[in-house]
Image 1 (cartoon, rainbow, N blue to C red):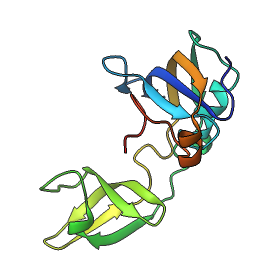
Image 2 (image 1 turned 30 degrees about the vertical axis):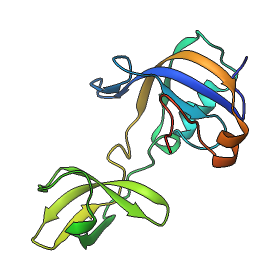
Image 3 (image 1 turned 60 degrees about the horizontal axis):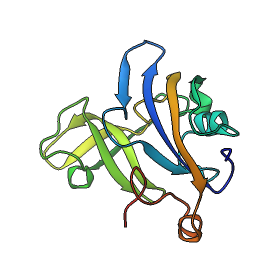
Length: 160
């Protein structure tokens, strides 16, 4: 089966930026799973997976516009510290998760006070060229429930 809309794809990946240092990898754990065609991964990677089959191994270079976005200078916001998720004590440079109207978003702490924090609202990898090494583990049709929810379930996917 080829990767196409409404397919659940499981794949192992390693990710590095154009600076050549590996940022993350799934190879020591479960493969990543996503529902193809629903915008659950960066658009450049999703487009590169289209038409591939189980067992395919390849590398893809994703420019910022198709990855985590172009960096927008001065995109900062002051928010209550209590809204930062991911640590108990915050310091400049740390990555936090914040719940927004568009879902969870990663931000980088610039300055932190007792009650308020200044954060950079760009994704931490905004402006970076992303290089993925991919190995497709499996491709299957998405279930009716997965398609209704818009994401993969089970190992490597979303759990309810």
